[in-house]
Every structure is written in C-alpha cells, then in structure tokens.
Image (cartoon, rainbow over all chains, first blue to last red; front, side, top):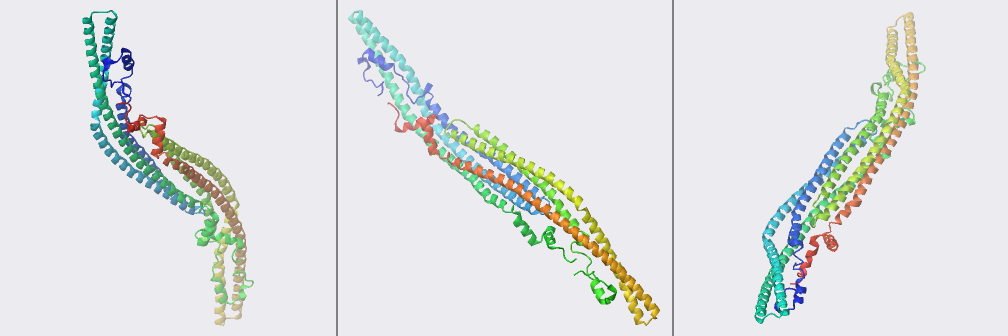
Length: 291
Length: 291
C-alpha cells in the first residue's frame, strides 16, 4: 500500500491526513541518510581491492616458497659435502637426493604461483574495465537518488502548509466567521491540497524512477558480484590445487627416506659391492688367512 | 700353509727355496705399504665426523623450517589485513587461519629438530670418549704393525745371504775345489741357513702377534661401528619421523581449505547471518517493497 497515492487529498478528514502524513517518507531502499546506493556501490567497489590483495597474498606466498626452495638446494649442497669416507657416507647421498627433491617441489610451486599471479592480474585489469563501464551506467541511479531526496524534502512543507490551511478553515468554522471569509479559507485549503497532491505526484514519480533504477543497478551489482566470486573461486581453486599437488608430491618421496635408513640392508649391499675398506673386516671373524 | 715354517732350510733344494722365497712376505691384513691398520682406523675415525656433520645438517634444516614458519606468520598477518568489506572479506579469515596453522606446524618441526640436535651432540660427546678410549687400547696393534714391518725387511737380506752361500757352495762343487774349501763353504751356508731360520722364527712370532692384535682391533672397530650405525639409525629415524609427522599434520588442514572455497554455501550462510549489506540485495529480485 502506497501512502501517497491519494487521488483527492481535500476529501480526507484532517485526522486521516495527520495519520497518513506522520508516516516516514523514506523508501527502504534509500537507506539511512539516503546512503543506500552508496553502501551498495561501496561494497561492489571492494571487488578490485580483493583481487589486488589476492595477487599480493599469492606473490608473498610464492616468495616464501622460492626462499624455502633455495634454502633446500643449499642444504642439498651441505649434504653432498658430507665426508665421503666411512660407513655413514652413503647416507649423505640419500639426504642430498631428498633435499634436492624437496627444493624442486617448492620451486615448482613457486612457478605455479607466479603463473597464477599473472592470471589474477589479468582478471584484475578486466575487472577494472567492467567497473569503469558500470560506474558510467549507474550514474543515472545516483541522479534518481538525489531527485527523490529533493522531492522528499518538499513534502513536509506541503504537508505543513495543507495542515495549517485545514486548521485555519476549522477555526473560522468554529468562530462562525462570514461566508466570504469561509470561502476564502476553503479556496486556500483547496490550493494547499492541490499543491500537496502535486508534491505527492512528483514524489511518486521520483520514487518509481528511483525504484526502477535502483533495481537495475542492484541487479547489475549482483551480477558483477557473482561473476567476481566465480572468478575468485576459480583462482582460489587453482591456488589450493597447486598447494595440495605439492603436498602430495612431497609425500611420495618422504616415504623412501625411511628405506635407506635400513642399515642392515645397506651394510649387506656395501659388503657385496666391496666398496668400503670396512667390507672385508667381517672376514676376520672366521680367522685370519694363513698362520 | 705358512711358507716360512721350514724346519731345516739347508736341506731344501735351491730351486725350492727360490720358489718359496719369491712369494710375498706381506700379510694380507698388513695392507699396501703396511697401511692396513691405518686405513681401518681412518675409517673408524669418520664416525665422529659424520655425527658432527649430521648435527650441522639438522641445524641447517631447523633454521630453514624456522624461517619458513616466520614467513608464514607474516603471510597470516597480510591475510588478516585484507579488506574487511565486500563479499570476499570472509575468505581472508580462511587464509589467515590456514597460514597460521602452516606456520605452527613448521615451528613445531623446528622445535623437534632443535631437540634432536641436542641428542646428536650428546651422542657425539659420548662417541668422542669411546674413541679416545679406543685409541689408547689399539696403540699395541700399531706397535705390532711396526715390529712385523721391521722383521719383514730383515727377511730379504737373510734370504739373499743364504742364496749367495748356496750358490757359492754349488760353484765350488762344480769347480771341484778342495774338500777344505768345500767344508768352509758348507759351514757358511749352514750359518746363513741358521740366520734365515731365526729371521723366519722372528717373522712368524711377529706375524702371530700382529694377527692376534689386528683381529682384536678389527673386532673392536667393528663393534664400535655397529654401535655408531645403530645410534645414527635411531637419530635419523627420529629426524624422518618428525618430518613425516609434520607432513601428515599439514595434510590434515590442507583439505578444509577447499571447503570454504564453496562460495554457494558461503553466500547462503552470509545471507542468513545478514552480516553484509549485500545480503538484502537478492530481495530486489522479488520486486521492491511498496510502489
């Protein structure tokens, strides 16, 4: 029910008019202090900021992974400098290989993230163009907000004027003033009623225009936001996929580490290959040759 | 068969003696240039070096993990500074939490590795004491090596002298020299044979002593090496266990990341909570109120 769609205000009783006009002129979409549109638009404008922040976040993560990878490559070098003599020596090769693999996995993640940053930045540029276009398209809504706001401010004055005329007329009637005076007052009331009616018409028209434009803008914002979230979802999916992939890769060679820790098997192999001086020692158990 | 356990050298034919004495005097355990013991001992001495290198390796790894952990904590802060407005805002909390968890996992690994370094250093000190004790105990073997080496150098001279006397005797016999000269030569041969016999006895005695001491040392080295490898195996097992534990922990919260990426569920939740301005927008789809 629209409180201002009154066909003939002068026919209403004063009490009805009072009751109707005491209601708010504010449309729920206008928001507090007419900032409804601003709030919506501000929310939409966060999109490009989120995209920029996501790129920064991924860039930082890529840097962290690169640093880790380089440190692991350095650790691999430390392992390859391990003393090449003694029974423990072959273990250094295991450390070297596993550190190298770990370095490689994190380097691969770094590269994937660097590629992803490019995707994010590309989307960010696209998004900025969409936002620029949107800003041009919604400027009419901002105008409609201002028109509605202006018209809304005129209404109380018209109402005040109309109420004052009604009360004047009522007072004259009670004071049994001359018919001429009464006619004069009634004419004034009618004029005030007509003025109020025009204000209400203007308000209703501005309101209808505002609602249509606000609805258009809101739907546009919603569509943009949905597209934005779909893009961000795809980018985050790619991020999560890369991180999980790396985790799975690392898991695949973490297990073999425990393999070469089986010294019994390792010693047996070393003995067979006869690589180490130590290898011939157990023969002493069976007594030295000759003698 | 010991080539030098000859009861009566002078009774042997020259050819037999030549054949026997052309064989090597070197005991297989003596090694090239008598360095057999040195090579074994050198191999054993690598133990403490390996322990020291392992501590360095783990320390470097702990430093790498600490650096990674700190960088992740910084990344978490970056995520918590993400714009708090807009539909994407709640995702920053997901990033913050997952970065924090990752930082914590790597910090825990750092601490485990730092504890492990203490274990390695403690074992290293223990090992150095064992090695010092061992060095004192095997000094007798080194003496035996030198005695055997000295006696082995005397043998060729004795052999040379004996062979020369035999040849002198044979030459005189062929030249049909006087019986007096022949007796004189035979006495010289007998003396040389006696000298060679004594040298062989000395050699056999030194060789027996060397073999016993070398066997004792070798068994001692072997026991030390086995103990060393058992210790290193336990330390490496702890290292591998910590690294694998961290990997499993990370795997447990990597999956939940993909959960909050489900924007549909997230948007629905946001709408229900009515936290965001955006939340009331879809109502516009059903037409604005009033009008």
